[in-house]
Length: 414
Image (cartoon, rainbow, N blue to C red; front, side, top):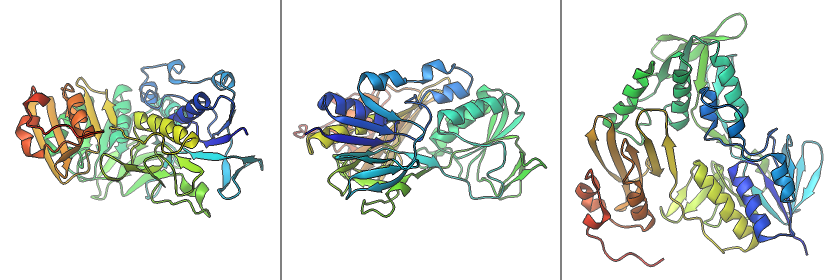
């Protein structure tokens, strides 16, 4: 009997799942439901579009014909209003009911709103979708001053966008360092100086108490908790994601700041799976639950979810994610879970070369590399193999690090 699969969300996780399902089951019925009005696009490149560096054309990955060629039913501009795991159905905002044998939830998240007065004013932007990028790029053409809030990976994208568009900016950070849970002040200062060179000034121990607006409800000023005021006719906010788990309310699907899945991407319901940003997955390398929003991780999760929807326990999700930043004259890369761990090591080899590793139970669980990315594959290999190496930090931090210089036991069996 023909199997039916429904996928909620057409991001890279949902799309890669659909592609894998079609490869695994040529005769299956496959439907993707998405509330966006365009097919899969490259979320990594939308920041380059917003910076004015790329036209729209390279951003799109799939056009509607891609789905037609694979006999995948793509329903755009369609919001799922109800999920019934026991009845094996979903319902859309138009009242349509879709039945499924297996369901994949890959709806991602929505940018967290800053809980202060006037955070919904005209000129206040979040950066998540292609449509967000279009609005930001359009507004930037008229802006004279900017404020960015959110000292993380999306926040620095917004700061780089203002810099590329030639808009003077302030970057308000609650702590004393950008991405302070992953970088020390020494490593962070490399990023801070690169921002200053681009006319974006980091402001530490700051944040936003409220925004001031004009008679048209357009933002004019950001006021921080210290009472300091910053002119801003453009504001970018990136303080995290609220995961779109509301469609599972009223069901027995386990949710904990995301949808809880095992290493096979399956929820606590045998026929319901999840993939992408929204998942709280069992990280077999870390040995605990984890969450990861990197593009490569989401793509792999979609593929693994699809394989296990067809044949459960056929392949586990075992992945070391990476996230790179290309805004500066030097490269930047993070991998794994650099904000976790119970131990760390760092080294600075030049004004623009710095690295840090995080360890858990003596094993590498993540890291950050600035300037020289050459050691990344070696660090990732050690992480994947779960090698205990924290007792050899001096070797790991050598500028020309080589795995052969480590005193290692025989690699564990896969």
